Image 1: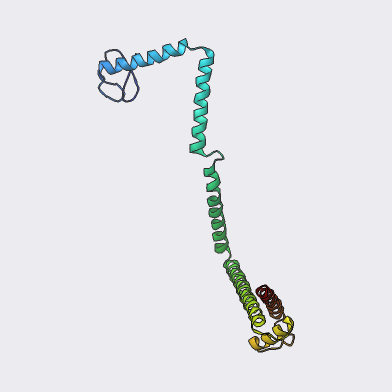
Image 2 (image 1 turned 135 degrees about the vertical axis):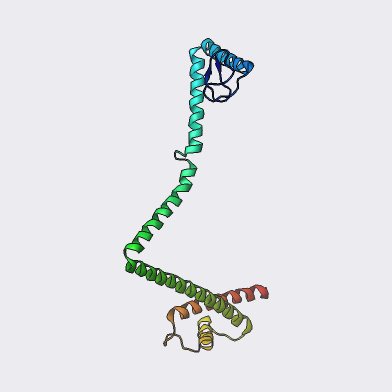
Length: 201
């Protein structure tokens, strides 16, 4: 029995054209296909049960492998797509909320803006405090290096704070700024004293 080389339709012996697709058939190619199929059928008949089982197992394993790669089935593709799906769902939900209640959307926007402003203010405050700490440490260090008179680090910090900020600590001054200034000033002052002792020996 022969088969069409184009569509795979069964051909009767001696047909020159496929009745299904009209493709001309060579007697040789139809015979070759027929021989190949007969050869495969003969090999399958000669195989034992365990060989057929092995082929079926390998075929199913290959199909499973392909389904994992193509379909996803819990693969990394699904995990990567999950955030996108979630983002799309969240976007759709927020769009629906805006359409349903413009006031609510406006309030959310204002709340977000206020939150961003608070975050920005906190960041700016942290930066200011870091600058104060660095400056106070350096002033304390320089003060101890430059003076030979006996003065306590707290007293020196008090004097330099008044000169720097033009206000008396604990009298209307920012207590957090004063405490940070004093702490870092005294730390720089102490470090300079240690360095001076090392230099002396």
